[in-house]
Length: 244
Ligand SMILES: Nc1ncnc2c1ncn2[C@@H]1O[C@H](COP(=O)(O)OP(=O)(O)OP(=O)(O)O)[C@@H](O)[C@H]1O
Ligand SMILES: [Mg+2]
Image (cartoon, rainbow, N blue to C red):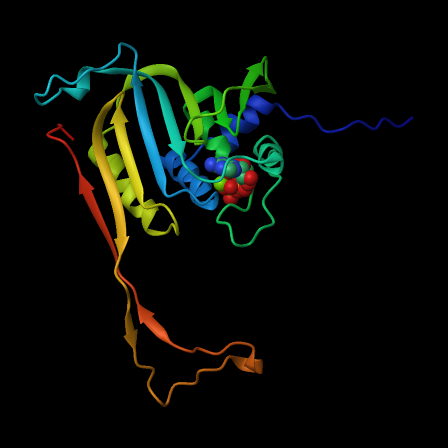
């Protein structure tokens, strides 16, 4: 007698032990930044939502006592289309578009390192991903379109926590941003209070003379170097009189 049955997977363990386990503290922001950059976004906003709405009184706020219950990430890239919704909710579907940074189809699942029920709002649709037992489910609903047509990812935290160290986070974002093509500005806020802003600008580029003796053609003549330009990116950080 022979029995054939499919191999089973405990989705919760798969996500916890493999997909949402990253060595670095802020990996989730890097993954969401890369996805936003792939979607052509120029602006990326991180909002820490306090359990009791935070209002700055103008003086130097003490962030260490603020309890945060939700992280929100917003970008102004191209809104989700059907293939994007499909890839988002299929583990390891991958993206065949070689112009994109994303390739493996797992980066988004890093959100599960901080939340059990991520919500993505884009293009007049809202997708919630949530557990029932150890199985993940996806619910898709129509919603009122965001006035700026931005994509928003909401992460209700597994447990309320203090705000991450903004200086460390900003430093991490500087490194992540350096490798991105389109993102120009990242803002970090606590409710409506802006804590940090990173902007990236580039100079016009300076032409570099190619020495005569250098071979400009690739083997097989498939590529030729026509010109070389030195381009510098400038990153600047601006923050209010906040304890970072
Ligand atoms: N901000 C966004 N705007 C539009 N589509 C998005 C956005 N974020 C994610 N997606 C869609 O969700 C898919 C899945 O994202 P995910 O990060 O899991 O995988 P990936 O970016 O394709 O690959 P990788 O695992 O290498 O990051 C993307 O391929 C894209 O189609
Ligand atoms: Mg990705």
